[in-house]
Each structure stands twice: as structure tokens, then as C-alpha cells.
Length: 88
Image (tube, rainbow, N blue to C red; front, side):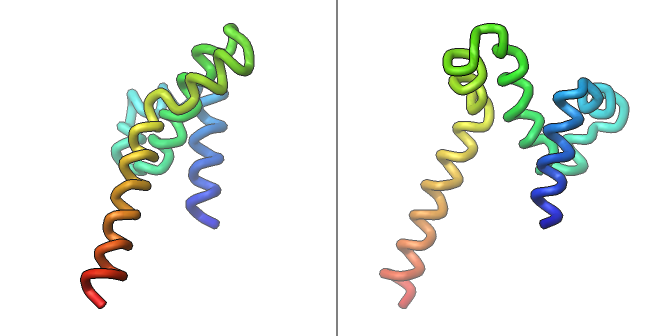
């Protein structure tokens, strides 16, 4: 529940243009990485929204955060495979 609230807070602050000012002043992304992740998802979407919903927002939303999600999913698969089949 708290993680969800932090992601929503980070996305909202990014959308309102407040997150960048907080980040420049206090290094907010370094202190709370989950809000930095939300910022990395919302910033490219806002930057490319003038190109339309499909080609702009949807295509560019995972520009920065996409590799993190892919590598996290692959690492989770490998670790779970090792746990189930190797370390019975």
C-alpha cells in the first residue's frame, strides 16, 4: 500500500512539474528510489504527449524504465528457476 502511494505521489509531482524542483534541491530520487522510478516513467510520457496517445505517450512511457522492468523480470525468472530446480 505504501509503495503504491509513493509511486502515485511521484507521478503526480512529476505531472505537476514539482518533482524536478524537489529533485534539484534535495536529490529526491536518490532518497526514495521508488519515486524516482515513477518520475522516469512519467517524464518521457509528458515529453512526447504532443505526438499523440499511441505514438507519443504509450510508446515513450517505458523508454527509461523499460530496461529496468525487463532485467528485473529476467532476474526474477532465473532466481526462481534456480530455487525450484537447483536448490530443492
